[in-house]
Image 1 (cartoon, rainbow, N blue to C red):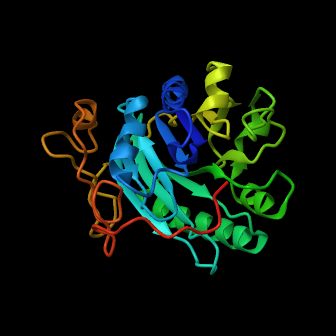
Image 2: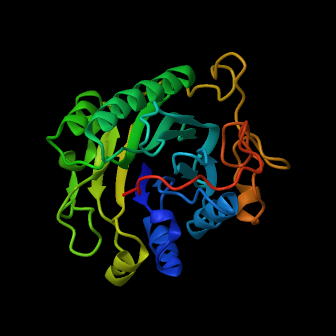
Length: 296
């Protein structure tokens, strides 16, 4: 069983110790983050965020503020961050995608944070699904998309996502499902969508101290427990052979492929171009972006 979580952390602007306790309570194998730190010391702050849950930064760019963190229970095969279509003067959006292997199954997990603007939100929802499926197909992986949708079920972008991937919460709900605002939640605007074929064991909130949930950030996290039994006699895929031309699994120095031992020792992973662990083309030494419309 795979535990995938999604959490808007509001750039760690609130009670960071409370945030750390909530992330630890998630017990996530894969955590999709929105509003990840993206200004001063953003790489170090993202590593700190990951360390709260015994995780490592696996994918995501600075711009766009989304990331995917992975735990030692999965093997990281690939990570990348892709900018989505620009809608000037709106905040630039992105998708972070990590391909992991657990129990012989490959899963491509995408983290998104859609815009408050309806037109941009709808276009980005379509683009995110397309990009996620492209990566999933390249690795022979099952796609899962998680994030802050910034609208509720029944609205256009949410319907678009739910028509292509299964909204996990209605399948096996845990709790009332509301995620915003953290203080007095009455809207479900954060969600996890999985490809058909996954068995949704449960989906909903996390068992954490209510005071921590309110203090940590303005959203509540979502956790989905997904299972995908392997048909009898099926041979697990080779982690390298089918990755696609010119693609290698992520390797950390002194460890096995996708191993998190370095992260567990507190050593930063160097990453690959396009991932959080390494400077991106045109971003090395780049100062924080000028302010734009606030994220939510």
